[in-house]
Image 1 (cartoon, one colour):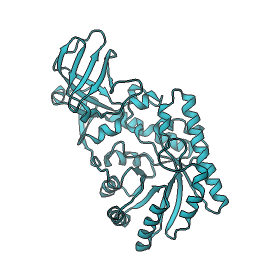
Image 2 (spheres, helix red, strand yellow; image 1 turned 30 degrees about the vertical axis):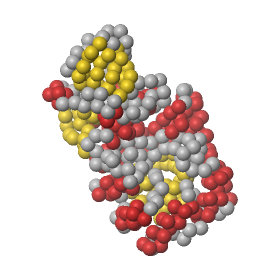
Image 3 (cartoon, helix red, strand yellow; image 1 turned 120 degrees about the vertical axis):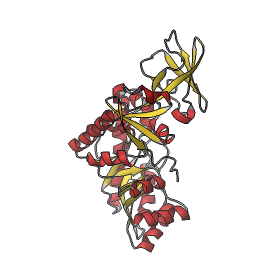
Image 4 (spheres, one colour; image 1 turned 180 degrees about the vertical axis):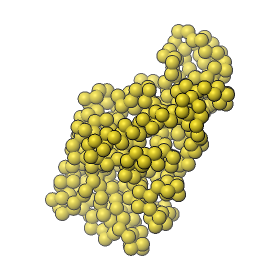
Amino acid sequence: MEVTDKELLTDTPIVAVDLDVLEQNISWLSNLAKEVGVKLRPHAKTHKSPYVAKKQLDAGAIGITTAKLGEAEVMVDNGINDILIAFPIIGKRKLERFGQLLKRANLMVALDDLEIARSLNEVGEKLDKEIEIYADVDTGLHRMGRSPIESVDHLYEISKLSHITIKGLMSHTGHAYQAETDEEIRRIAIEDATLLNQTKEMLAEKGVFIPEISIGATATARFIKEIPFVTEMRPGMYVFNDRFVMASGGAKEENCAVSVFATVISHPTNDRIIIDAGSKTLAQDPFKHGGHGVVKGHDNLVISSLSEEHGTIVVRGNTNLNVGDVIQIIPNHICPVINLTDNLYGFRNGELERMIPVLGRGKNR
C-alpha cells in the first residue's frame, strides 16, 4: 500500500486499509459463492464495521455473522438486520438484550447445549416468536459442539422445544490453518462438510429436517467448488487477509488489504530495531514459523518480540532503516488487530479517502 501523504505517517502506529484490495476481496468471494450456488454469510468479527458489512451485503451476501451479541447490536443499530450470532447466549441480562434486539431484526443463534436452547425457548415463548438456531458440531477443531454421533440425540431433544427451530448445522475449520499443504486443507474442508451432512442425515432419520449446512473459515473458502453438501459459508478474514491466511495458501501479499504503519523509534545496535507498535497494536497471536508480522519490503527483518507499546525487530544482515523511518507490517492475525483500534484509515491510490470507525470493537459481551 503506497501512501502519498507522508504527513499522515508522522503519527503512527496506524491501521490502514487499501480500499481497492478490500473491494476486490469482497467481490472475489461473493462471485465464487454465486458461481457455486452457496449462500454467503460472512463473519463480521474480523472487521467489526457496519461500513464493511454493508459492502459485503451490497456484493450479494445474504446476511452477516457476528461473534457476540454486542456486535449484533452495533450492526442492527446501523441498519443491518439479518444476523447469525455465532455464540451461545446465556445469562439473564444477555437474554433480555437478545429479546429486545429480536424485536428489531431477524436473528439466529448458534449453540450446542440443551439448557441454553431452553433459555432461548423461554424468550421465544414470551415474545410468541420462533427462534432459529444453528447447532455447532465438532468436525475436528474440538471447540464448540459434540461429535456427529453424540450430537444427534442432543439435537433431537432441542428440536422438541416449542419455540426453537434448528435451521442449520455449522462448524468452524480453524484447524485447517495448521495444515501444511493445499491437499491437506482440501481434505479437512471435505471431511468437515461430510461430517455435517452425516449429522443431518442421522437427524432426518429421527424426523428432524435441517435445511442449512454452514461452514466457516477463510482457509478453506477457496475450495468451495469441491466441498460437497454445503448450502452456506461464513468466512471472515478474507476481507482483509493476514499472515495466517497467506501461510494457508488462501492469499498472497497483494491480497492483504490491511497494514500497520509503524515508526522506528530506536536503533540501539546493528542487529536490533525498536518500533512504536507493540502488542496493543499488533496483538500477540504467535505464528507457527515465528515472528509477529511481515515487514513489507524487508525480508531480513523479523519482529521477534512485543511488549505493550514496543516492537523489537531483529536485523539479519544489514538494513538502511534509521530512526524516524516508517515501515509497513502485515499482521499475523488481523481480527485482534482490528479490535485494538478505534478507526481504520481507508486509502485509495495512496490518498486517504475515509476514516472507518470500528464500531464493534470491544463488544465482547
